[in-house]
Length: 359
Ligand code: NAD
Ligand code: UGA
Image (cartoon, rainbow, N blue to C red; front, top):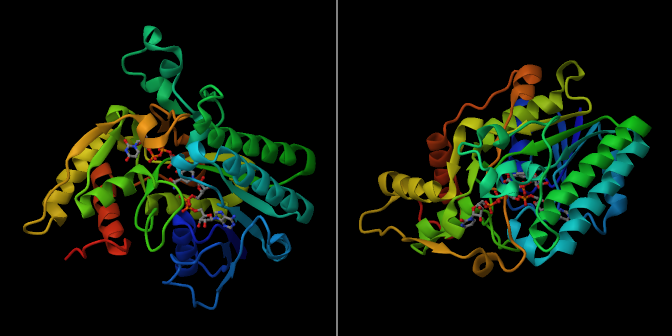
């Protein structure tokens, strides 16, 4: 099978290409602006990389789609600071450019695996309704299921939600192409994947990286670990290898189980508040990685307006319901939150340009 990875140079794309090249006999075509994360397999004969900008290299991309059996679209702006700084660019890349890819897949009758995001679920009911209606645990409403949960996002002046809405609209259009044109699609909603080669590695990224990278940079450089608005919001951190296991199954598509299905990919057991994440990472760093004489950073609180600018708001909780992936693909994540953090921290320090090598 020939697999096309659009966005192969990114965090998920580079891990996915590596896995496909090591464990299958698929031919892998990759397209991206950058190839800095592809060193381990760039020269393998079953891998072909084309550098380009999806906004201007339409003929090149269309040719790659035409010769592929399955198209995996990972291209997006995926850092929340960009949703606040450049909302229109987020809409244009994450919706308009990806819409065109879906249309070419319809025209050329190609299977499309579209990367969306857990961000489509937005906030919990409790958060949207205010404290009067808050259920103290709020677990039921934070457990999001692919085919039954509603989506709740903030007002227009909180323009961070443009990412969520662009991803949601793309999902709806892809679904509609399945209904009207017979497009065979699968949608993947990752929940906060972390691991080696996440943001800020061998080159400067546009916009702030995601929180794990901020905290790792602070640990390596001794600068402050910043808790936005107190760090009370929660995320379920998922180790990249666990997620790649699931995505590889989705590509394999046993018995057509993934045809026109949406899948949550995440670790429900790994929920942690951002405040606890900071302390947990600092503890792990002190125990496992700190060199003699090294110092630990302080943990401070910052206002979201100062950190991101006006227009920021973010999901309070989101826990993946992974019943569908368990049932249809017999997949479930293996790694605990501590294992996930330790392996990601070791991997980050190995790749980050400013890292002190860990012995
Ligand atoms: P990433 O930023 O590491 O990868 C995105 C890749 O797209 C980058 O390599 C980038 O160079 C490429 N790209 C951006 N603009 C381009 C353009 N104009 N032309 C060509 N290539 C371009 O992000 P990631 O974490 O690997 O995420 C991949 C996908 O998964 C995205 O769609 C993201 O929204 C989604 N997602 C990721 C996570 C996660 O936990 N990492 C969670 C939810 C959703
Ligand atoms: C991310 C991004 O939207 C995407 O990468 C992706 O779609 C998705 O979620 C995902 O990874 O599943 P988010 O989890 O909000 O969104 O991204 P982070 O920037 O990592 O922020 C997590 C939390 O940490 C937020 O509450 C943020 O305010 C906080 N934060 C961030 C800090 O407290 N300190 C920091 O230095 C950075």
